[in-house]
Each structure stands twice: as structure tokens, then as C-alpha cells.
Length: 485
View 1 (spheres, rainbow, N blue to C red):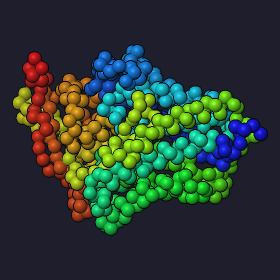
View 2 (view 1 turned 180 degrees about the horizontal axis):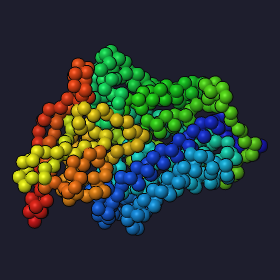
View 3 (view 1 turned 60 degrees about the vertical axis):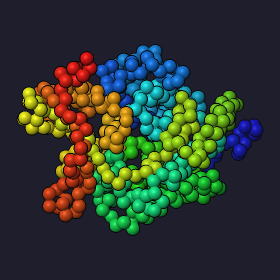
View 4 (view 1 turned 90 degrees about the vertical axis):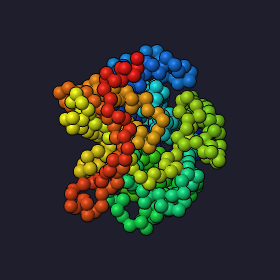
């Protein structure tokens, strides 16, 4: 046997895990490209809220590599998104995996390059941790090979290191964050104040407080203790991965966090061996390969792994830094990143409600409310399930209500609503001015809370809201023009 095909190199018991990793990451890429096709032009396109053309004029290619430094158009964006979606679909089906190891490698690297080009010009609309997570995962799984070779052990171990950073980093952020995580009260509020509750969130919020304290304890165990066992011998590593998967499924059940939870579940499978999978699903068959890995493949994988290990120094140091960074990329290619979320949990939910008026005098005909697809609006509307799809505008509206200083995109949103921009309006759930745009727009901040069981039974409401403040006084295009001049 050649030295590079010894047991220390080939992960001979992880064929099923490889199938899940390659197809699962490809599925997340598919969702990301569909999201870009549907949303990018309205948010960042030629006539978007933050046009790419303006961004690339002030940012150098070396600081934010993207194909769109060469040229941007909505047609080119959509063409690349379709190409990425088609490539991802073939990987989900498993066609490239039937060929030589370089075929899925090149296809995953192509998906990574297309998505990197989108993310690096996506500005605030693409500033989420799961964008970097998908890019890192997509790059690493490219080197798992095809069905002709055994999965490289070093790649499987690096994927566990990715899961470790993802989970342990999130746990450390919480312990260094708000006191609600240390006194076990964070989940008293989180289900109500999270960015985008789903249909189950209301019911979970009304569970007894001892259940919520148990949720926090379970979270601390899963994120601060269990990750270390990912590197233990089997079956301990598989058990650790199973614990993480169960906690992620609870997050899937109770919230909308785009593809973050599903991608974490997929990546955790890197620690589950074939024997464990067959124990859980006895009818599951695995096809082992008899051929050896070609030397060129071993050299490429080993070289890439060494490079990734070098890049690991910065996120490793960050895990134990006093001022730990959350969802940070230490290089322009979004490889080997720092992760984490919800270092603090808000006790109150504020929502920005945007309204329009068609009268010459603002509000003389009453104010009509624009409704977004995922964020709370009409108190009688039940929260919806959208994840793993990512509603980028709705998430930014949540940050706006928290007082983010990044408001340029919202100023442009007001202008485009006054102009009746059809591309933007298609992203909303309800456009109260289908015939012609309003003359006036205003924005108010409301304090929302989940309705009580009694309020829900009596009035059929999921939310109760009271006005808190005025964010934008009534404004018209003429008034905006006078200010600009």
C-alpha cells in the first residue's frame, strides 16, 4: 500500500458523512443563490438601496475580491446566481461525485467563488455570520473528493474544528455577554425578541420559566462542554455530534435563522461514523471504494489543510481573547472565521412600522401600513416560517429598531417607496398603494410583545403593540429634494 493511502490519511468509516456534507452544503448554496436572484437587485442592484457600482468605486479589489469589480449588472448577477444554483443542484443529486475527485472539487470551488463575489459586495445586507460560514464550509468540503476515493481524514477533522469554533465561540460570546446568560434568564425573552419569530415561538415563549432556564443550561452544555468531545474516539464523537444536532433542531423549531442551523447540523455530521449511522438507520448502505487516492489529490489536500491550519491561529486566539470578536473574518476570502451570536438578549421588542399617505396634507386620508414578509406587523398575523430562506430586508429592519447607526439603506428605502419602485415593492408582503405611490411616508417605533393566552383567545391576536416614538416625521419627495439641495 502507498504511504498516502494508509489509515492515517483515509477516513474509511465516513462515507455516509461525506455524502451528507457534500449534498447538505450544496443545498445551502442553492438557497443562497435563490435568495440572491430574488433579492440582490432590489437591495444592491443597479437601482437598489446600496448599489454595487458605488461600492466598488470606493473599495479596492484586493480588499474585497469580487467579479463585480470588473463589471456589475443585474443581468450578470442573476446569470451567476442561476449558474451557481444549477451547479449546487447537480451536487445535491450527486452527479459530480460519480466522477474523478477533481470534479466535485472544482465545482465546489466555483460555487465558493461566485458566492464570495456576491458576499464581498453585499455590504450590510450580507454582513451575517452564516454568509462566512457557508463560504468556509463550501471551500473545505471541496476537498472531500468523489466516490472514487476515501474521504481524507484531515478534511473531516478540519470540519470538526469548524464546528468547534462555531459552537464554542457562540458559547464564549454568551458567557462574556449579558448577565441574562449567566443567571439563566435569557430565554425568558429571546423567543419574543429574536429577529424573526416563527409559528412555534409564541407557544414556546409561554412555557414555564423553569423550562427556559433548562434551555439555557442545555445551551451552555452543548456549546461549552460538548464541542471538546468532537475530537474524542468513537462512539463518543458521534454522541457529541448528536447532542449538537438535537440542540440545533430545537433552534430550527423555534426560530428563523436562515440556513445557520441547518448548515451546522450538516457540518456536525463530520463527527458521526458509518457504524453509528447504520445503528440509527439499519437499512442504510454504504459503498466503499477499492481504488487508492491519486498522489496529486493527496498533495493538494495536504497543502490546503496546512494553509487552513495557518489561518486558524487568528480565530483560535480570538476564542480566548478578552474582547472576543463575533462573526469576524480575518481574511478577505472568508476562510477560518470567528463565529457567535446573541451575546446579549434584548428584554423588549421594538419594531419600525412604515406608513404612507396619499393626501396633500399628510395623514388627512389616514395612514396605511406597509407590511414586510417576516417581521411582525399586523398583530393578528401569525408569525411565519421562512428559514432556511433568508429575508435580508426584514433582518435589517430588526437591527434598525435596535438603533443601529447604519441607516443609509433605510433612507433610500423611504425614497424608493415614495417613488413607487416596483422591484423593491415586490419584496414586501403588502403594498397599500398598488395604483400609485403615496405622497408622504412616515416611520414610527412600536413596542411589541407576544399576546397573552387570554388576549389570543379573546381577540385572535399574536402580538400586542403600543406606539413608542416617531422615527421619521412625514416626508415627501419634494421635501427630500429641498433638503438635498
